[in-house]
Image 1: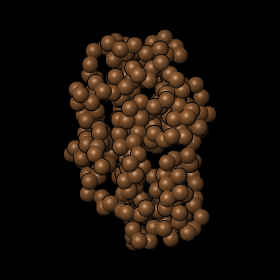
Image 2: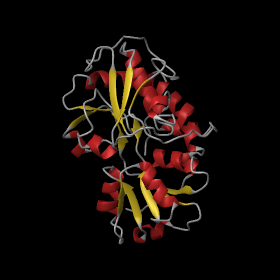
Image 3: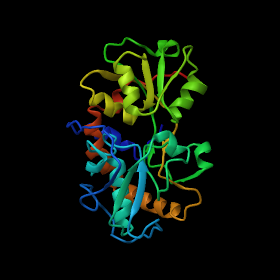
Image 4: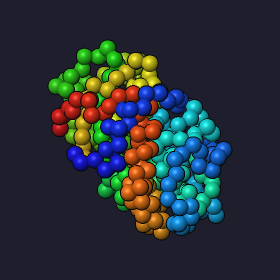
Length: 288
């Protein structure tokens, strides 16, 4: 599958430091206007219409290693999604980024609360496009299989395994509609709960986004691993309120970030540390 900004994932393996943390908080304003993020473009060359002047209000399921880095929501100051937000704010002349926590399933159901936009490794789907606007894709959303490190589960055995998924994700739809396992699917509210269920042996495998799975496996201290990946053709986008006047502006900013190399730089800088491995070396499982 041709990669957009995901081509940077192969570069990401060059970084080696593990990122920490997955606790929750309430709200955050970056101590520095744009955290520790690499910035490009010219400040204020674009214009966004935000709920409050000079503030970008974002709701997401936080933190998320490699994407929103920090032990708590108040400490988030880097990561791919956060730094895309920082660049959107900077290039729009906005000095304040406010993060507020929302569960993923509430967020994609339109019940996460008022916001200007969000990045949360959200795959673009037709159902979601009925209630939200999406930017052009900025990342390929490949699916992963996560197991205990001691597991011998194979590609041929996955359909008969006890599988867990995160509520509201495209992986839940994939397992339900395409994989159709013989055992009842276990549904969890968040990534931490899902990964902990794998580590505890409550389920045989989790099916979740590859980028999230690799970060969790790397941070697990060897408890869980990613034995296989599944390419579903899904892509991630910035999610905005329906009919937002900002959607076209965000598309222009993302296009500029692709052209000037900022997106690849963010992938190389942050995801390699979170992943601890080259995603291209993970076997491709054909389980459709």
